[in-house]
Image (cartoon, rainbow, N blue to C red; front, side):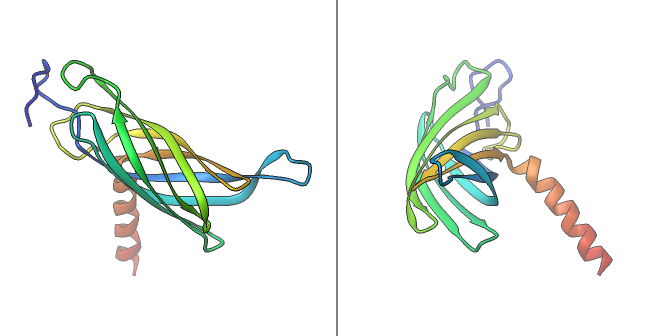
Length: 156
């Protein structure tokens, strides 16, 4: 891929991220406190020049799930900026209740259409629950997963 930037690299179009978040629920005094409940999920985003869709799916140890989707916006200029800064927002189901998802992603120019090293921060909201999330790109979670899988399979 070629872009008009001095390096010849462009912003990526596709993002496959792993994300993790911890439940923060209201207690009996209407204060929010963290639970021991962790959420693990994956999201996929396609962004053309400035706007594109995203979808995410997550689970927790209590066999609850979330399915969310929405729109991602690229805030930086693909022709001149070095850092790809995106905002996303959407809605869906979190533990069978209406929920919302907002956040930001940061990435860099690449010679590939699929982002490798991006990271992001977000928050999911549902009835009396807030789930702050952190997401990492394909190479950050994918390489350790493949190595771990290889070690497990090699040990069998």
